[in-house]
Image 1 (spheres, rainbow, N blue to C red):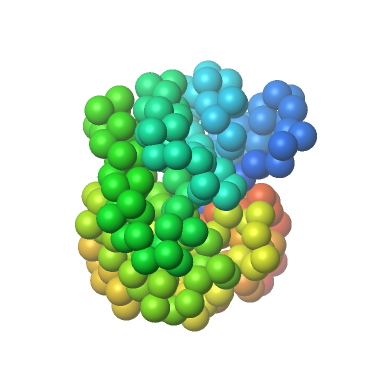
Image 2 (cartoon, rainbow, N blue to C red):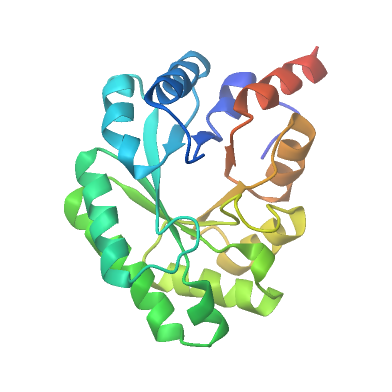
Length: 231
């Protein structure tokens, strides 16, 4: 990404404005949507129970609704993930972030991992052909070899993005992981960095490393930090 010529508007379009806390209230989701409309973020990322509310709040604004599937552990059954993903897409979610089955990957049950992702991709495609799937790898739990394998399986299963983290495990996005993921998928997939992105400097580092999208609850702080440094 061209950081030198980056504008606040273009930066906002890289951010999924996120609120995934279990205690999030409807009013907080409405506030999240209001901020997303004001700043022009790419999407709001919320739990599935709030997809319909977010769709209502954002209709006609150009801000997408993103939700999470099998979150945050990725350890639900494949059929449940597929059902949840299909429901979300039918409700209006245009981006669906599904958590990889980390245990299956570590056990080298690669067919299960690929089919788990493919089930989500197929369910989303059937519900809404315009919706996209991101695969959350939870990179902090994986070796570099496992990260590469996970990226390749996500690509083989038809996903559109690979994503670093849930933000609920032991660590979040790193520039090294973004570079590894980019070297693995090339330009065939997009990459979302998430987890621990709380300021413009961190966001900048990850964008420069090759991230296309940033998942952050600190979207306003990132934009404000960018503007302060720009001026």
